Length: 133
Image: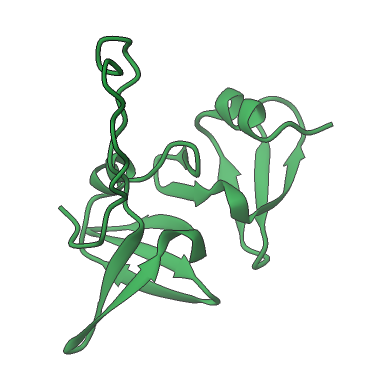
């Protein structure tokens, strides 16, 4: 489990019965840099990319590694802001600049930093979240 601060969203009475329970999602991700830990707000994070036993966190023009599985991290992120786009990547939807398509199976995301990531999962969910023409 990450040590980052989490949203303290209050669950409305009766929400669980209605099937719309809220979860606490990460608001910051702790990144160890030598003997110090930097807490990066999730809105500043562009993407997470699997790198062996680590996850590369791309934020503010730099990349840092955290020791955590991508699936564990995905479960702690808001699905309204973050989307698993492949087996090895999660993207912050607020940082997507363009979507290039050439058929349903060839979709590429261009992020604000210029980084390019292939969309191989959740294409329908991506299109529903960010409509394009």
